Picture 1 (tube, rainbow, N blue to C red):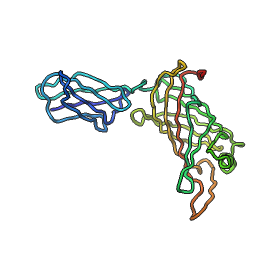
Picture 2 (cartoon, rainbow, N blue to C red):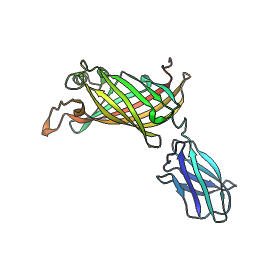
Picture 3 (cartoon, one colour):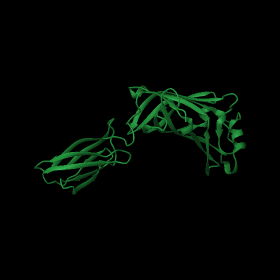
Picture 4 (cartoon, one colour):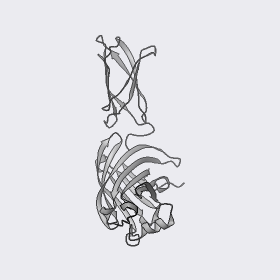
Length: 272
């Protein structure tokens, strides 16, 4: 008895904690229930037989409405309710997408003295994304200027560019090339790729969240992504490890990379 429904995205992922509101033909609310982590809505209390309206909402998705018929047993089987992401398509359309550095950021965070964090960014970078009809075959290629590192402190930036860290004269570019993509949840993916940094090439996975697609003021189409990764300096032969009070390292051995990316559909960026 009661209501049973499954709330999914267009590509089949569960929409966690979606809210289903049921109203009768007069518009009066008779039931409100929340989906579980698997996107399932299930209630036990029977409903009076007759037609009802189901309204399904979730943060970040456009609402969906449908009609459900409650049988004499007091049960309503709504089946699968599909929600579309608000403001854009579920996935970017296939084709070439060009990274827009003016509306993107490549940042990194390292621990300092064991008590605080140092935030930095790379100000010069470029790249392209090839979205394939089979999304798993999509590719990402990006290159950063190592010398464009900026932490807001000129002395620290000079040290980061030295052979102790990035050694930008010997290794002026940082490159990332993907070789695979796998789903990790609704609007989430794991990008598998190789990072070339400080003369060392290692596999690095990016945890990628797709934020949506929409038009821009210059007549183009944009897609937005957020991605994170964690790197170990030792993996890339950056072993500088000055030790200060009580054996605490001045700079932490791990680095958290945070990417906020906008990409424009096409081979080039619009003017403006």
